[in-house]
Image 1 (cartoon, rainbow, N blue to C red):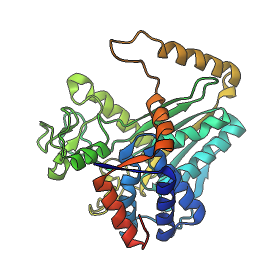
Image 2 (cartoon, rainbow, N blue to C red):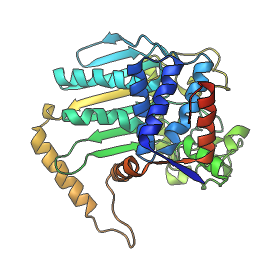
Image 3 (cartoon, rainbow, N blue to C red):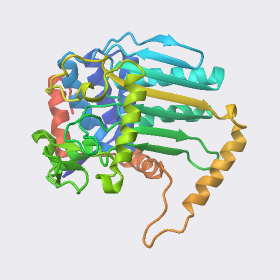
Length: 357
């Protein structure tokens, strides 16, 4: 059973929770917009379903709601940002704005972030570049839940990559994907629905394939994109590793198994190798390569030709970003469906802060 709640109601409620946690009104606005962008785009695993997780991290003293987010090192085209343990939902847009500023000045801008927390969906940050006629990129490392190919130990996060590319008449190309077969949030949704996971998503503590969505609680692990070696899991392992290195080794954040877990009840790894979680964000001005109108006209052509590729029977060919854009249009008007378990979680949060939900 699901409940339909309007976007505005969810946005107002989420904003007020962040204010009650101690965020400034401006930061609460940013955090609620980024968080709710996931629900609007149909990425339910990363939206308000995560709000209770942020509250618990704050209660555990792992989120600073009044951070001094600042540049600690820079060149004309690059920067390192210290998030001061702030909400990643606030730190990442701050860093992306710097990447866009640098791209405006010199053509491209690249920002690596340390001392941050979970930043919501990567696509929202990458899309900030679109309105400036820029290509945006965003990635982040995350809680170590993923076993490398041929390993049983959890070493990497779901480590998403997002790339947003503007077009002219056509909507933008927006690729936003985890480097695992499935994000952990999808397992959480299956747990709430009491359903099994597809083969290739997870393995048990001995490295054997499993369909139990609770497997992680028993020492199991998520699998890299591909699922197993025969289906290319080594490629997913490589992609996740690249994200980890760009986001954390480059910035001075914790990497690999030292990345802090999103859930507050798990302890931080002993002997940390850096500060907090890491992100990597980039912006490229199109006219640093070719005239923007010329490029966007060719992007229209690219998108149109790919969308019109001969489909297999009963299917239509999609462009990255199509399903999320269609979902956003629908949910802004019709509201956002919330599972019963998520509603109960939000009611618990409401009670904690003496709010109504």
